[in-house]
Image 1 (spheres, rainbow, N blue to C red):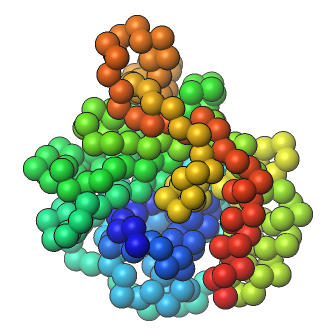
Image 2 (image 1 turned 135 degrees about the vertical axis):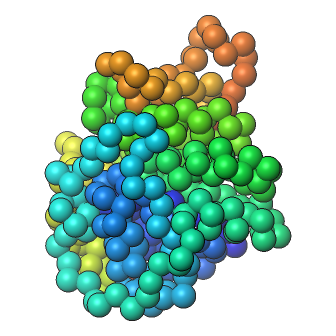
Amino acid sequence: MTPIILDMDPGIDDAVALSIALTNPEIDIKLLTSVAGNVSVEKTTKNLLKLTTFFHQDTLPIAKGAAAPLKKTLSDASYIHGESGMPGYDFPRITSEVITTDAVTAMAHVLVNATEPITIVATGAYTNIAQLIQNHPNLLGKIKKFVLMGGTLTGGNVSSVAEFNVFTDPDAADIVFKSEVPIVLIGLDVTLKALLSLEIIEKIGHMGRTGDMLQKLMKAYGDSAIGGKPMHDVNTICYLLKPEFYTLKDYWIDVIVSGPAIGATVADTQNRWSDGKLNAKVAIDINVSAFEKWLIDQIQKMN
């Protein structure tokens, strides 16, 4: 099993990713943490509780995280994910509560008590992770790697150059990329290739109780591209379980923290300024058909 801390801002694609993580026996979630991003942190926290209740995982610890980026004003994506972040399905009454400690303190507690290195997966803004790095630098050696959904080398979705998670808190992303913790970056370069067609989404709706829930969320999802809907955050969980689906390339990544290119993730592809140093493995391609078959198989196994 792979022990992870899962830091999220659900969000519809986060919800699909979490559904797989909660039900796959190869993943051992030590902690769930919320962060503001797609919607407010109050709503993302509630959405984590909704999903753990749905999957009867009431004992899984959930900690509430950052309500705002480190410096930048929060601009959410409710225009994509709906007012609640997870519209379209009537979830059962929540039967659990968040733990009393904040996300960063809870992350530190997990790391202190870990008997093996922990992978931290982030599918929202990296605010909590940046604060962990700042407040607990002595614990970084207990982190195996960061697996991050975010960034782009080829074009953004909130500006011509910036992807939403990095754009939401570029100062946090800058801290993470300078942390010297190994990073796998799963960005728009692959997530916009791995699209779910409307036919596949329709098929998912017939896969029992969980399929019905996920299909209704997917249908309410405002993100779309030619050929279908991207499930950006699902790629982090897929990478953990099926890394062979992804082509990675080592780069030095810098994050632009101000100006018209704020939120851009810039790779030193020509070794102009990084002096040969590398700080991230960046996904540049994906086996789309394998991803599609894997996702359908995961949903079928949830019931």
